[in-house]
Image (cartoon, rainbow, N blue to C red; front, side):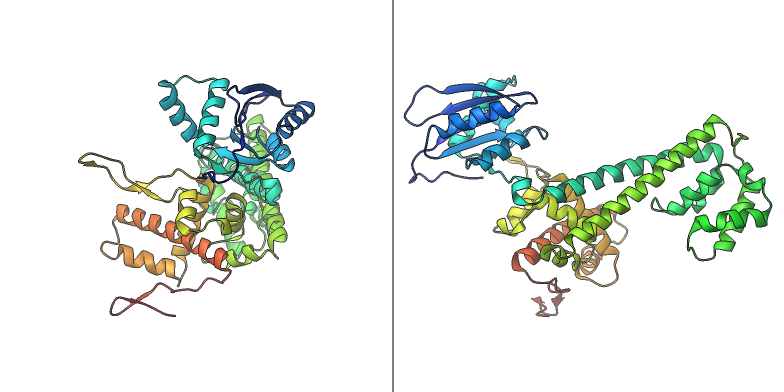
Length: 420
């Protein structure tokens, strides 16, 4: 949150309700009782007209708006480039304030502009960080595209496992491995049914499938097992030339394409960030790989702007919140009012770190769950604590500019903290 300094000259307050094709603008000039309303279309000429109108007032101009999809990005960048100060209004805070001011839940664009102006006046806003101006636009696009491709790949993978394989080759699923196994999709694309395998002699099948499975260990034994599995399969007797198998192969080709696209993004991200100081520091933290580091840098920007790790925890939605009223006290749990993708990246990084051999995260998980190793609820709470620890470590490493030190928090006999 930001508060205006009362010692400075009052600024011209500008509230903008963002929409796809047109924006409602409400301007409050110090010393003038009447506010000015403008409707600005999403065109270059209209943006220029708004900038000229605001520049004509002189002095400081403070502009507040609510992010609406990505429709605010073009106007916000133009206003920021023109030298105006921008503030971001939380959608949740805007809705609650609108209900409190107007005693109702109904909304419209002019009313939202009035509420944004009120929130600007009381300082209930956040500092707006433009990704292009901050130099993280490319990172955000890489991160967003990687997330979209990963989601599509997972959906395709589940469709293959739950629909196509049970119909046309159910027994082959035990060789699947994981969703990154391109060799498995390549093998299925060439031999989608048991009949396409048993139509060949064993040696002919092994010779044809040998280059498809890559550099796996025990390739001969694997292909022999696949051949024996095909001979005893309970798959539907569908011809390889049928339209159904053509659709199956089309989905397999889509899965392979998504795997290659994701790998290409990962390589591009590493090439872009390999000399980035913050990226190098993040990669030394257990559990943080190239994509986790990319997501943290893309979603959080410069972590040095957070003065304390509690501010970063709140930004991630990892701060604790308790609902209390009178003598009633609810459960204390994560607020989750924060960046969901950043929170997910930290959660996954904590899970990876907890599975590694020797680090402070695995050590803390063991101490947290030593009371009952099989208690699922206790382990869930422990993973939440590890996620918060991951966020604190990420903030400390980047803000301090020092590499991660393992076991810095390990307790020693007597209740003290290890100095190592």
